[in-house]
Length: 342
Image (cartoon, rainbow, N blue to C red; front, side, top):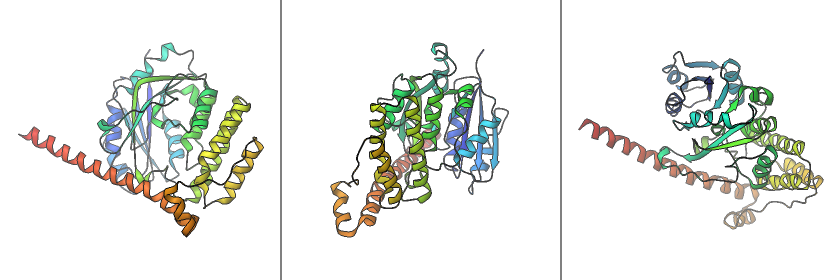
């Protein structure tokens, strides 16, 4: 029998993207899907746009604003699927993404096998996206996957995965306490509950770069820094529960070293706690240094200004590239419209 796949979309103030996201879900070549969108108290037209798609296979729900994790939990609580495809409200799925992964299920040892896929980032034109493989793009055991993620600062996106209902239940709900890296923490629990990760290179998804509006942009937010700290501690706990060895402790130390700068100069108390954790793991961490481009600003004007410039400039560059991509996308769409009319 063909399994039913639930495509679950949490949405908040996503009116510009949500139609494209839903359309990418509707375009899936796998014949048995249901789509559930949960609007998390949007203040724009996200809900109105979503309701235009309501049908037998597309369910639109709304709730008071509680955060993305809570919206995902609501979506899962009402879905009927044998398998779960999470999809963020501004991202896209390749038409064959779900089918390519479902077709691999017969090769998996159990329903606890987690399937991953390839991903690429884009602004407005996903056809311009470039897929850049990492050392997570292969079949891996849970401990090896976590080691590479934390020790080498590698990532997979929320949309990459396909997991069984059994695996989702075993992992537990999304953590509503987390506002930053709730996806990383959630999928770490999924990986712990799995019997391994099967990588399907043909299963592609597209992660939209959102600039300053991205939930991943911390920018000194106290709430996001506390969330990141909680997620980091949980990551290290999960990895060491799989294997407590010299190599897993080294990966945890490197993980702290990679993330430490996020807390400077806004939450030095958390930075001290992280250094203490590293010391207990057998490492020693100095204060992080900014690159030479920003270090002189810090030396002359202090940590706060140096760090603010370091956070803002890359985001300004990214926002400029996204604006250019948006302009080019509109020009191309206009040209295609004129060509069809002629």
